[in-house]
Length: 135
Image 1 (spheres, rainbow, N blue to C red):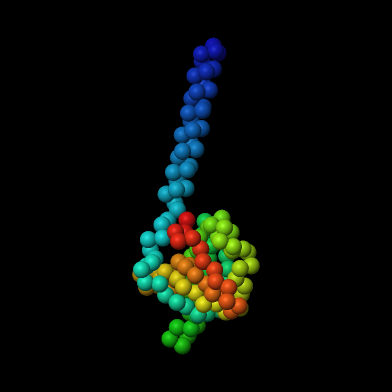
Image 2 (image 1 turned 60 degrees about the vertical axis):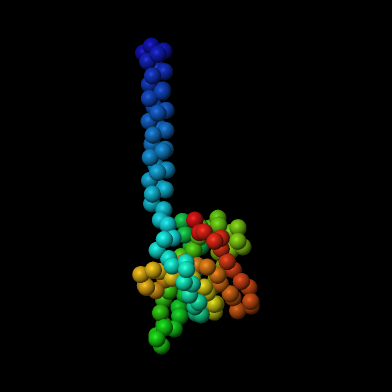
């Protein structure tokens, strides 16, 4: 194969690799949802017991058990990414099962039990918040 043929082949492979990288990045970006499903204008205060804390990406999850109409109800609260939370002082053991906390969330707009994390106050008075715009 001539030198120009080798250059053309290399250029084609580089172009193909660049296309694949851009396509993968676009796919990941489109898979990431917004927080538009949450009602940030009407925060809700909850008191309950931590069932679980998932310090994971792309979003963390806090499961809280609250009493609603005299019955225990599981509330799933979505939080920011691990990197965002670490910057705010959160960690793997920020919330432990059985711990009582007061929580402020932006509730789901559809009325389902759940919401986006805004602020938590622990029994010892520690207040935890995350960035104003979770990523």
